[in-house]
Image 1 (cartoon, rainbow, N blue to C red):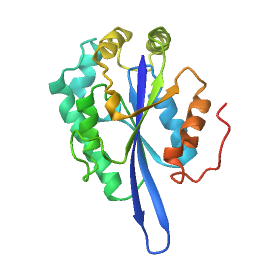
Image 2: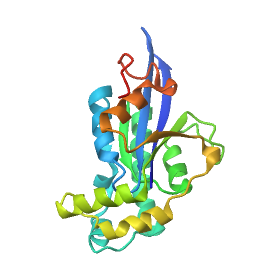
Image 3: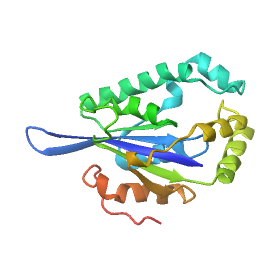
Image 4: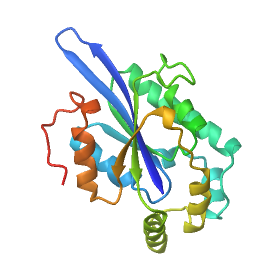
Length: 208
């Protein structure tokens, strides 16, 4: 039903100019478009794209292949490795795009802590969320099509468990984008958002 993106912004001054870098995490349930949007953002922004699925342990992947939902115990080491990846990019002042589910607020807090200045539970950090909103029936069609094509190890049967797990706290400050739009229109909408102006070397682009 939903997909999130959040941006961890860092600003610093080099010897010659002002530079702004961001880490954008494309988040949501299976079928929300994380990989598609993440790769297109990579192309448009010239930032590196990482897929969180590549950080899963083999045991996690095997459980998902068998249609067994992951537990918090399964996910914690995974999120900690993703947090460390964010920390590395922030410390090196590089832009990063990360595709990740991060369905619960506590998972997002772990990723936020990749920003060493972040204070847990405050949301008062350079973090911006974008919600890609799509009906469950749209997600189901996408997931079933992908499963039929053998393009992902997670079966369509796990979609409902992800939807059940997904939680949104309005106090986190979530921006919204219609996830049923064409991928390029979604990317253009993100690039045009005021929160990201100056982050990418691109001019205004038509959202449609």
